[in-house]
Image (cartoon, rainbow, N blue to C red):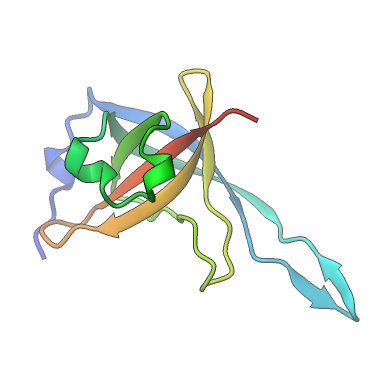
Amino acid sequence: MNDVTDAFDPEWLVDIEIKRTEAGEYVDGRWQEGWLNLVEIKAVVQRPSARDLLVLPGGLRTESVIKLHSTSILQGVSENDETTADKFEYEGGNYMVHSVTAQSVGVYYKALAIRQYA
């Protein structure tokens, strides 16, 4: 795999503080929420293309969406893994990571994040 870390121009990189909640579990028959972890990452933030938006369910394609490129692993929405999506603040808005793909050329991840209004 090619390492494209150097392709991320430092001028484009943005510091983002990810709020990641680990999966909860039952302890002695009582539900315990997962721990909140704060993870610092650097990412390039862009507008998504029309093609990028095709991976989102139809109703989410009209929401405010941004695209992140990062060498850090991001966690999207997943019922199978029983995980909650990463959340972060960007330019005054709150976002939730919805979809993450590992790029086949290079060691980085592309994620789509949807603005949360509530």
